[in-house]
Image 1 (cartoon, helix red, strand yellow):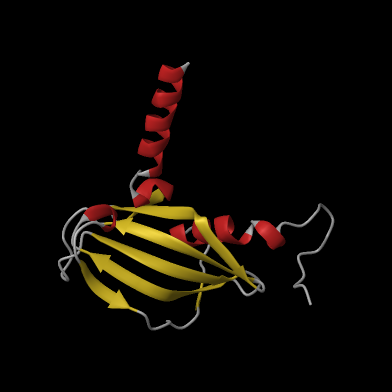
Image 2: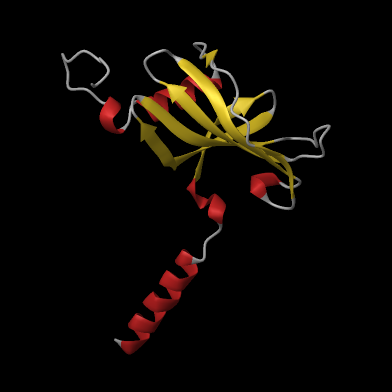
Length: 142
């Protein structure tokens, strides 16, 4: 029994020390680059949903980046998205030095059907307070 407890303790310690990218899950490819979402990062502000996106580039960009993380905000009622923050890294999966740090919020742009951004919107906006019972209109809460 003591050996089992020791093995369980070692397993739990190893699991807690797992890399930060463990929460990323695959969403698709965009222009040859891999796009991932952190479903655990979804937060709500009124009728808006925020989520983190990771892009791993297949080749080094002009800014010497191999990955970027982007904090997105979706206006779920108006079908729009904007960038809250963008960070660029010299390695894939947010590894290496952070070479880009943009904290300026972008303007709202429409989310187009059939794009990877539409997939992100659907994941972010159909969670939590945005899920409605069947037959109930998806109206903003007061």
